[in-house]
Length: 223
Image (cartoon, rainbow, N blue to C red; front, side, top):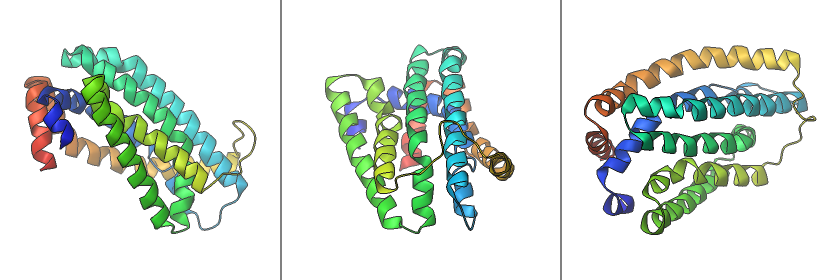
């Protein structure tokens, strides 16, 4: 509500354009690597370590892919600012990957009060930064802050709440890695279909009508 007062609608439209593409990356990143820990009845250090490193490796690849594709996505929408937002988001994707495994274990242990505290704190801090950036710094950074600062706070608090014991750098258990990928591939297909079905209108409005109309559409959806 505060940002809507401070910023013009086109900035939310630019964010909407960026998130249509970045959302696909989020779906792939969250396609079951961490939820496998919740699904598995018993887990040990090999499961936790394999989940953490697989999540990190995939997140690095996805963040780099989004960063590299950002100029081309800007060309698609004919708006250079979309690429700037995508670069902010790609950094957030990488940062957030560090806390995904800890968060999954917290959820598996039914510590939902801890999850709520982490999320509320992350929302408050990222909202404060967003308002500060909107007033004193940069409007694009303001609308991107929740995809940059929020994952940072969530990752830090999740790791503090649930420290991890993992194997050395990039050590993956072959058997568990196969199980994680098999589980995740089943989840990914349905999630991509649902995402495409829910966001095709965002893409078409942004491509055909531009960032202002997309910003207005996003505002109506939030209402």
